[in-house]
Amino acid sequence: MEVQGRIKMVGETQTFGSNGFRKREIVVTTEEQYPQHIMVEFVQDKTDLLNSYKEGQQVKISINLRGREWVNPQGETKYFNSIQGWRIEAAQSEAGGENLPPVPPADAFEPAGDLNEDDHDDLPF
Image 1: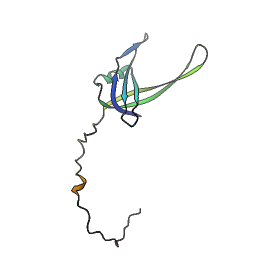
Image 2: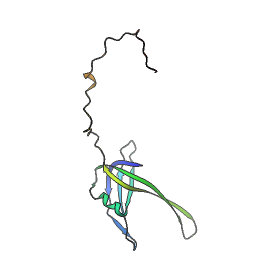
Image 3: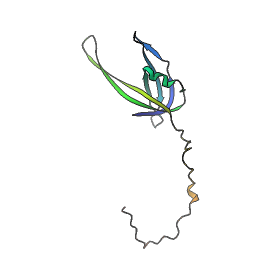
Image 4: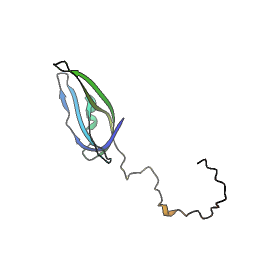
């Protein structure tokens, strides 16, 4: 799965426990009718992937959804979800169709004037 949007925040790398578990969070704001602020966490060696990204950049993040079960001291079972990133790349800019040839404006085409209504149309629709 992928999340695409503009970086709102890149957090610092945090280290937890005696085994040195590392986690780093990034928040991406989607650009749709109702923008969403999606927090994605990168863990262990993947935290370094965020080093070259800054707030305001357009990115595409490849993610996995993770879920876990936890039983609290009272014996109640709780469930938690997380969004874990494993790849991040700069998204293509909206105006940046560098690889595509320019499209001429619609008025650059001449209207067809030699149409005959009696010609048979063999299109299936």
